[in-house]
Length: 371
Length: 171
Image (tube, rainbow over all chains, first blue to last red; front, side, top):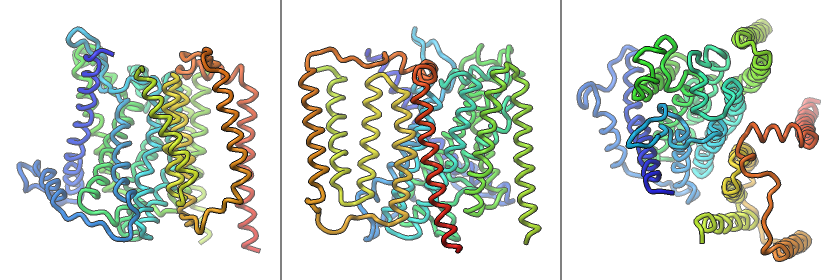
């Protein structure tokens, strides 16, 4: 292994980690401002121009806060849990390609930290590890509320992980590869959200549940569980949980952009012009940034719009609606690919989605009439 | 000593230490966590053998899904710590069998020292998912299907058990 390769990896990892950390800081501001805008408030606008220094002020506040460790907690897991939560959130971003191959200093550089040919499987593996931090935080706090928050979270993540994994199967089927770069290249001209619209929507729902965002933020439902698994945490340890949640949001948006929204590729109507990534490679990261920001806006928008779901309905929705629907979608996609009729996939996908909505509606109406 | 060999020995020590920790820990939660670390170190062994697909499946299935369920059940039931002293009399048979297995393993290793190591499939085949799927669905189709049926039976069994409990409560 020559040292230039090592240097290349180091620089790429540093860039990705720094992007995630800075992204986390400004995502908090972005969320607060967008929420304020949607709720006809002003939001934080005092620190610096339009509040750009607000994240710095928050960070300083959190660092200098007193860090309490309650007497009843189980050490060392209580201290380890926040760290275990952050690591998968950062690590999962490694396989996401930020642009096409680049010729720099006489060598070809791939704009992804890990050029793994099992990209989708890697994401599924890391996502399945991510729940440990929350579960352990809930248990080691030795507090009923925290424990219930941790248990709820693990049940929720396990349930929605199945649908999420089947979404990865869909992407792998349509692209004919598990490699994230090849998945992006397979979406040249036609994004997978167009080819498999219902699959993309289920993916977005499942990711919201996976990162515990509203309307699926069960583990921290304030009215029921105070603050859920992080009730006993304060100071920087609390900040780490906060950070993990926002970094997961960024990472999962980048994954959604890569798998369903064409990744670093330009939209179809720009192909062949000078705005294409094939002409100017540096447009790749910019397109990626735009798509990730749009998806993050979508997540905040949902939080501002929808109330929190009830817990048993959340589980019923995951197991009785999403999972059967995803199984049907996998079957339908495989049929479309085998028959070599690509137009069949979106048609059948939309039909399956319509049937699912109809059945749910039917069941809910019946329940309402019985009452 | 090559880098890979050093890595192997470090991992081997971690794997054995966590396995022992899993057996000897008095707390069920720590036991489960030792087992998670053990699974992850085994996954890295697979990576060293050029089998990233198996490594990632190991993490996704065992370290991710199954152990999370284990932890979930341990926490839900609340059987977190083992009470009382260790009962050595209960351990006689398991210990005897374990020692037998160890002796067998050491014997096999000594017998084979110096010979070339041969792994069934070559590394390139194991790293490519489509080639691996082809092997799995042609040469090993029967074992694959039998495993699937086995898992289905286990699943149906779990459903039947939980259903019966519920109907008893209602009656």
